[in-house]
Amino acid sequence: MFCDVTFCAMMGLVLRAMPFHFTISIDEKLLERLNNQKTREVAFGEFYDALSRHVYMYALRMTSCTSEASDITQETFIRVHSHLCRGNAITDPLPFCLLIARQRVLNVLRDQKLDIDLEEHHIVVDPYVEIERADLMRHVEHAIGKLPVILRDAFVLRYYDGLSYDAISDMINEQPGTIRMRVQRAKSMLRAELMAVRKEVR
Image (cartoon, rainbow, N blue to C red; front, side):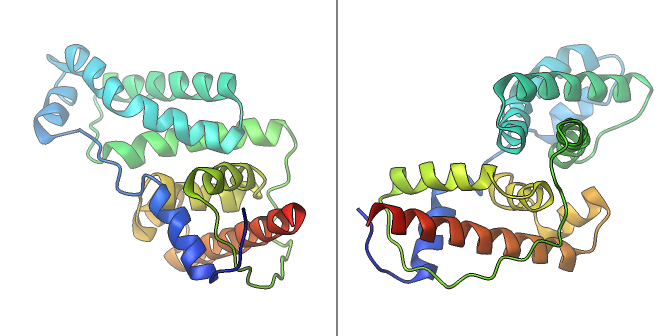
């Protein structure tokens, strides 16, 4: 049931429902073993177990396709393994894996001829919606899937993967201010989508 509340309260529910502070269990000892040629193969299985679901969920939210997400996840870790086998080291595992996954995601979406143009403007009025948490997240997940790719990418990296604006900036070679702008535009579009849902159920 929808009723009027402030937009800030609504977005608070959305963001609290997201795994923003998801803990990645990659410690320094695992990284040392992963980066050591003698212990790499044994450590890689543990590394995969710790990060594969996180990479899969990023790919799934970006593509909305379980088979594509599975393929992207597998390809990501194959490339990570190849990177290590060439004698390279990994220092920041989550952004590194997401960077590889992101490249594949964008290739897949381009192949599907999806529009990633940022020039579309969405001028919306602040909605005042309160939705119970489970119902809200169902609508939010649907709305996220409808975001333009480049906005969805920034939003998912920020709020689902918990990366800072600086970390995303380094990862995709864009200014932090640009990333922040994309996230804000994504929020505006989510806000518009949720407002539309509220009108439909009235």
